[in-house]
Length: 130
Image (cartoon, rainbow, N blue to C red):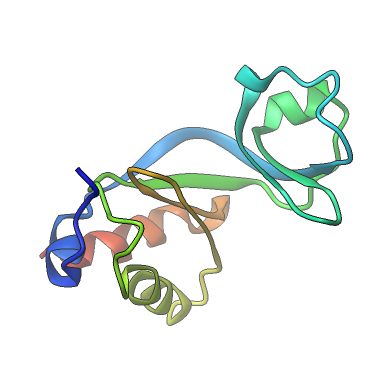
């Protein structure tokens, strides 16, 4: 199954879930010495490899980061071809001055927000299913 494409169904059924923990974005040149099981997500850009890690993993690896974030997963299986989902929730969050960093994976969309904004972000995201 390739996931849901209908925007109204996606918004009504996205059921955001706050994943416990403190998460950070870091950059490295190589993955040497980094256990992939400790990496939440990574993406290779031409400038460097971006890692999303638990804060304690970054600290153990002595990696720099600028902000501690919370991880929110939209639990609906969204299609990679769905149109408008990211725009809808990012607009709603931006109206409340909440920055979001979005990662779309095969099954779900994952939103990283500053830790201080977690509760408000969850409230806003849950309003879509009311």
